[in-house]
Figure 1 (cartoon, rainbow, N blue to C red):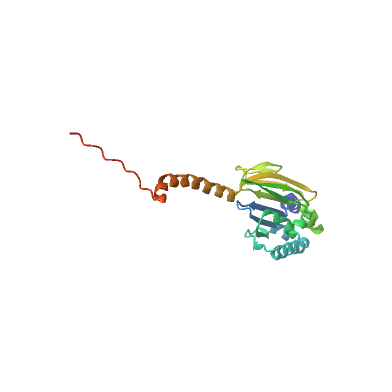
Figure 2: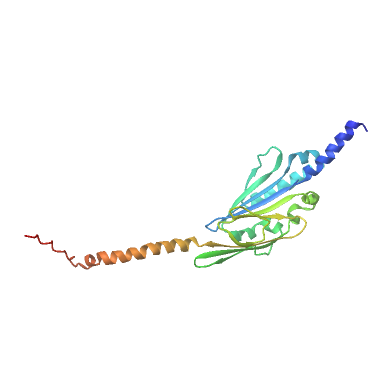
Length: 243
């Protein structure tokens, strides 16, 4: 083997780990809104260069992406292709009426969440408390044909809250403490836990209205009560002029 071929081979071998690092990227971003609705964003991608270097895997990955796009579109997700030239994949977005509806998605069943109460909500007079307790298993989502690549993948669950959490076991948290990130393993179950409490907007609005109306009502009764009863208001006599 010539020296040039040896150097080329060494460069290729050195580049393979970098190409395989994060070869599949799965990101699930759930945003809980103040009105208790939720926005779910799913991103699934792989480097375009990896598909070019491994033609035998190209059809499997493309088929995997197409299957997931069809499944998510059937559940009401809006699908858009990723615009990065070096990446193949897509983004799927859907508005949920509440976080509890996450468990109704077929995607949740593929993540091993079937039968689990992923989010539970406790409504109080002034606050609503959210509890996240889930065990994610991604083996069914990725599939056996992509299991080898999945071991080198970057998989994340991201949760954005309208308030700061009371407690959690997230891998990372944003500076404002409202966006939490869990690094997921495709080879084992991932336990996600969180407790957060948000104000009940309806109760707060009603409280503000009452706080404004009660003093206003008292003022109206004190000032305008004689008029409402038809009683003449007493007028002060003008001061007498000094001689």
